[in-house]
Image (cartoon, rainbow, N blue to C red; front, side, top):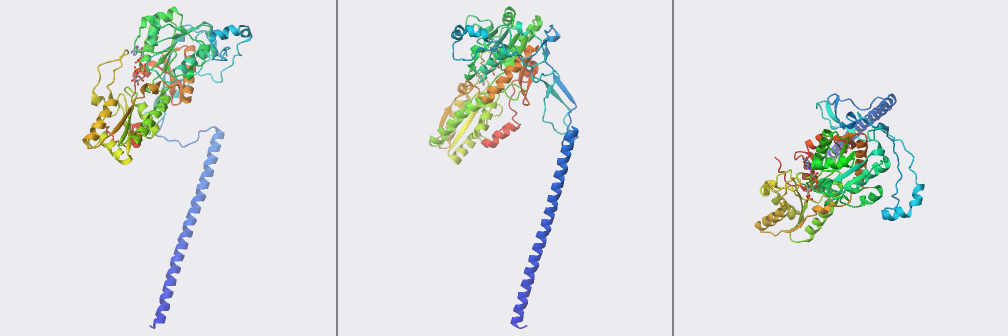
Length: 539
Ligand SMILES: Nc1ncnc2c1ncn2[C@@H]1O[C@H](COP(=O)(O)OP(=O)(O)OP(=O)(O)O)[C@@H](O)[C@H]1O
Ligand SMILES: O=P(O)(O)OC[C@H]1O[C@](O)(CO)[C@@H](O)[C@@H]1O
């Protein structure tokens, strides 16, 4: 073949190949477009059908969504609350918001100045108009306990009695005297709860009697040499919610049932509000039992308090979030110190948490700056493959510094359990924070390095702050609902948020599994591990 013909043939073959490739590509692309267009049309048809079905179901009142046969709830076991109405004759007065006049217009005036200056105008003040409640709650309205349901799980759950005002009162407000006591360690929001109980009793229910503020915890019921009960009024508590701590003071120990019952009887107290942790609630239930044995018509209401967040069943205890927030300041300082102090800066922060690491764990998660988090629920391994010290050294080598958060109850496996207890019988804790500081310094030295360790112990700072906005709201709900429950004649109960709804909880149930601790096989610990990247020592 002449070379020119060969060249032409080659050109034709190339042209044909290109045309074939282009044709193939265009055909494939067109086919793909067609498929996509059909998929889109199908999606739009499905969407339209779905919307129409939802609209039709809404019109007919039928529930929407897919029925899944392997997830069922067909029984609810209600955690009933003891009811004084079953043993004592109720007053059965209709429950309305009485809106009793308040004289707390300016909390910065001394009460005495205010009274003398405004005696005349006081006469003009009349009580507000009674206002019906928007929603009165019935005793079989409940909040489901286990709201996370798994396929083939037992088809029952427990239910909490829903908190809130009841239609009929057990106690005649005109005759009610009440008492409030705060026990155990401090916690942000104690003053908010005290204030709300006082205001709800005085203004919403318009009680005619006194509200005794028991000073210094359970001791204040009988140790009058050191603690005198005070009369609480809306005027007196008007400004206390802006302060941390408790205006009533608190203490450990000093529980004397006979003397407490004597106080309640001799002062004709019909509603007692006990604010405290699991120990306090155990005491509250004994008071309730004592009242029942002696035929005393007294409602005992608990309000769970603890920065440890170790009271079971409730979503969280009031003050916990404020403490987690306050702990951020210490963690941030530890980071700054660690970054700036060379070589190998390490900031160690010790946080409270006797047997539960919720505070340290949540502070770690919230900060996102922590490289090692040590909790009571998780064994501490110092060296080796899962050792926290090699991990820490690695983090320091990677980023130049590291931050450690250690809960005060961590490391019993290292330091042993103390035989010493506080006045309430709580075990004292060995000094894990300073021990870790020494161990870190020793380990770096052994490796021929220097660690510049700065140790921060903000324990009491974190729990003595005022409540933040979220806790303040929670405290308000707790205070109001504790009063609603007591005035309705419930007793031996506590209040709390369960599954984000306010409920009444029988104290025996509450304390049976308290103090709770974090599940080391659960998702919270998993999240902490994801943040710190420390080795998991849980087996
Ligand atoms: N089983 C019990 N029976 C009666 N009273 C108790 C019981 N346990 C504790 N108390 C009393 O309750 C009060 C508070 O207890 P505790 O000091 O243990 O604090 P708590 O309520 O558990 O709160 P915190 O979370 O701050 O430790 C103390 O006055 C203590 O004497
Ligand atoms: O030193 P105190 O006041 O007895 O309280 C310490 C304990 O109180 C708590 O804050 C609980 O209220 C624990 O975390 C801590 O172990």
